[in-house]
Image: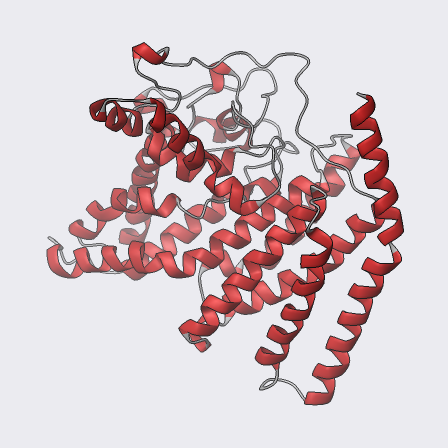
Length: 416
């Protein structure tokens, strides 16, 4: 069983999001949108699934450095654990700060900032490539002599702490604001307003930002998101869009020396002969968040399918050790495909209906393959039959409503 603190806390994540929804409803704060929230969670799902394979890089390299180059033999006790927790957050600060200040590294972190809302679901909006650019920042801890198992636990706890600060339901927190990262401090970090850009990089503690000159107090409510919105609910594209943009801009740069500078300078940098650094501009008043609408029955359908996917994902993450690599790759592909399929429904892609029919069939086969050794055959067949019939009936029953909706949207576009 996977005993990662992040995986174990999954049920608590959803419970706290439900509580936040109720609180925000009383506060009349509409900071949850279904398409955005599901995309946030989808990105967390994809991150966890791909992280199964990237751990070979991060934890594997850390363990190698620990075994080969550790200077000290640090004992495992409460005091060394607390010291590691503090030092880890120090390393996190620099990894996080460089992820904002180096264009290539920003490609691995921009995902987390790309939501235009700010709520607990945004905490789950994690990148699938960030580990590639940041794992090396923690290697000094391995060389010092901190055990890899302790590091995994500390990193999980650090990430857990950062979950609750992604909310507008909590205002200032008095004395804690002086040394801890709080919702107020982290709202600043997610702002795309020029004065908020690249501020408050701390994970658990805010003191590193105060020491190294990157601290900013929250003033007016931030405008959330990134300066070039991704405008998509597709979790795969959200992960790749910045790299795709980098590829296009690199083609415009003729000199290899400038191409290299482009990779490692701040996001927005270009050579002077191409216009130079593009400064962050104020958000215009007429700016509108990216949004799409679908017929209400499709929202219910996505939610129904999403519950199924969450059950499968949780089972996958909790039982990683029981799967061989073929099954891990197959399940990972199935889960990622499902998240992309939901985004196609939200965006009303032309191919969503056909591929959703195929996805449901293949997902049913996948579930049968996994469950055949865990449950009685009759239970599996009855459950899958009910799932297949309800899914296909839902798609068929609402097919006419969807076509009418698409025609209305098409007519409105032509009229505009």
